[in-house]
Length: 443
Image (cartoon, rainbow, N blue to C red):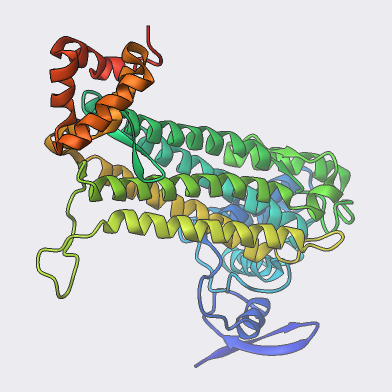
């Protein structure tokens, strides 16, 4: 295999002649031979946008030769169509290896005597480029997730309307409780997803303040003042995002609490997915709804069908909750003017957004095929003594208790029919109608 020789302050190194990167990436590949996830493509795409913004600012201010700046800009645009990175997401160095990789691939593609550090990295540090890119990637991730949650909310709102006229018996602590409608149950699910949608949409605001221009520790050392005030404007134009330069760049460089806040909102979404998918499994088990069959459920039991989509979504929820711990731990372990664990933080945060997006898409499609077993809902409703609770305003607690006791002594199974015999068909029909059950209090 033909090679080329490159040099850094550690010495010389032979790397493959056709490698798209240089010596810094070659060392990182050797230093971090870690299986598992590599640097997210969304982060590389965001870093290319940051590099393009830096080149535009340097060009406009006359701080870089126009031909070199244009070559860098064109390379960034071309690389954005294939933003892959071979480096491990668990690399050390606060993202330095990723920054150097992006610098090297841009320089290699740009040619025109472009140097990866002297030109591509001009007036930058990993410590301002990398966190800024994470925020850009995360904002785009949140926007995509918000659309997925919106579609999921809509799917459950449609089920709320479809099942609005189906009386059923509620359950608290897994025991029979007072009656409501199946539509109301699904309406509660839809409301939870509506909150998720709003939280995900709004939390973008927490990520709009960036530290680009702060260089190593937020003081802007080595960067011209004119560049510091311009570069975020250029990034805002490129991305179309409402980005703003932080008032205190030392704070923005040292502290990663904004990512923890966003991750907490992702965890809330995961918690809702876990709870609601668990409820759907219970409703299916109770026979109130029928989940669509999507695959055989057993290698030994013929005809068995399992709620596999719900189980997959629940596993995603568990993974996102675990990722929230990772984000929290990484943010809390930064030291003084830097967060060394930003690569793992970025990987976990961006993965959570992608996983939740996939989960919402899967569940929305699955929910669209859920049907109600109205006959079974009616059987359970009619047989539950708890429907007598709806009559308390009319006949009182003591009389209701007497009816329940008498019914149980008689060994019958259809409590609603018994109530008709005791209270009359008109009162029972009016009291147990879906409209009355969902009227939010009695008149």
